[in-house]
Image 1 (cartoon, rainbow, N blue to C red):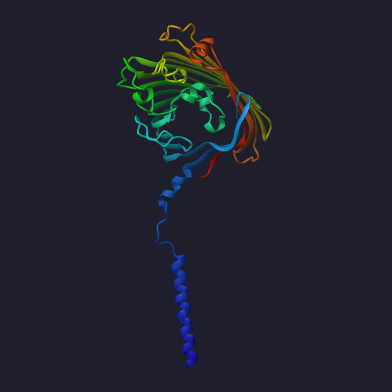
Image 2: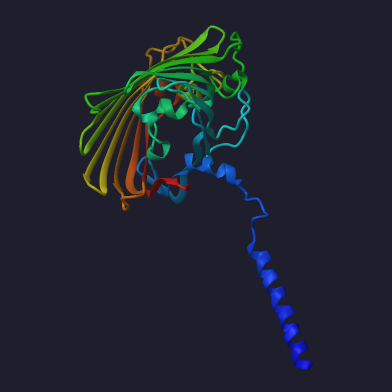
Length: 390
């Protein structure tokens, strides 16, 4: 009798154990975080951590200043199709300000937050915050592959809310038309409420562009013209001509960019004129830039990159009676880098190089406003990768 009781007790315990195991392994009654019926959508979605980080050593006028590790760029990106005709893209730059902007109400650090509708094989419509289709190869590159921008791109509002159409009548020839906000902040924030100038009631910009591919892809083009209404009767006209030569081991890119501004939108000259001389943005400025980049992949895993930039700033206004020239300053930039790609199946590179900039002021800007020529430099090394997380 005692033996039968012991056996019955053991059977009871073992059956309870089995039921407990069954409960732990049975997950069919619980919903997954991403519902099963929506998991197929993830096949069309990419999550990318666009990263440039490294160690930099800074100099000015040949004098060593400091060394530090720094996240130069970190832009988290999510993009993909939510429908066979609807594409979305979101990219947030975490190395930028998190303040919501006055005009578009989204934080400055958001580069992209848009939907694209594929109307047909030849026509696409985009709505949301996107890039201003400035033209030029420099701005078209992934920002993490840029060690220093030219003055015009560095100082511009490059990501703006608006709508655009892209039309591809034949393969490899695309024409773009955009209507976008002219800025992210208000007129008063940007220009400090200049007397005699009223903010525009339609502060918009129009951009037309051409992206082309010629001679079996050996030559690529990215040209554009933009006009922006900055204030009532005040405009900015911007032209960019970008060309790229693609050979087996060489890639040569050249941009010419010019910004003609009724009001100093780029702001370099206005920022350098002392407040006791003129306390507002200046009128009639011109900025232009020559940008040249050569990439030479001399080994499958090794590349040399050379960038040269010539930036010119001109003040065409006549506010100052002592002004005797339009020339304000000239900036020269030279960026040599050596890049190493260790993995064939991962877009990641180590870089080592330098960024040298020299600023030469005209005799007028130096003598009238006390500005002195100077140079800056940095020696850099680190890692760049658009890490495709998913």
